[in-house]
Amino acid sequence: MNTDPIADYLTRIRNAQMAGHKVVEIPASNMKKEMTRILFDKGYILNFKFDDAGHQGTIKIALRYDGKTKRPAITELQRVSTPGLRQYASSGDLPRVLNGLGVCIVSTSKGLMTDKECRKMNIGGEVICTVY
Image (tube, rainbow, N blue to C red; front, side):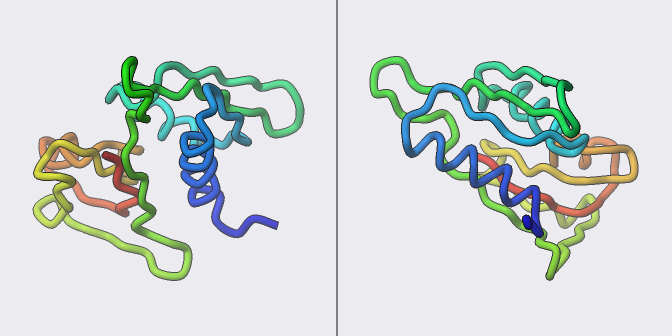
């Protein structure tokens, strides 16, 4: 039984990149789908596909690598808020990832957003993870 599906999502992506896989398949949920859309919009993954066949459905993510050096586009994925210790932040206290070069994914009352979108709309929420 998996107690933290978001940590499992991040770990599957991390492990697939370390192994050099081109595609990773992850069990779907609405939160994972939104996180995948954010990663795609920010250019961290190449493409994605939602398969709704079966009970839960899956997300297939095509990972992005550098053309010459074959290094992954995602250097680090880090879970911030865990089920045992939730991390909340107001719009002014949201963490800056690599001085604004990275992305912090935040769960707000308006849905999942990046830290920059939260600052623009002046809303805070639960800090899910950081990506760079």
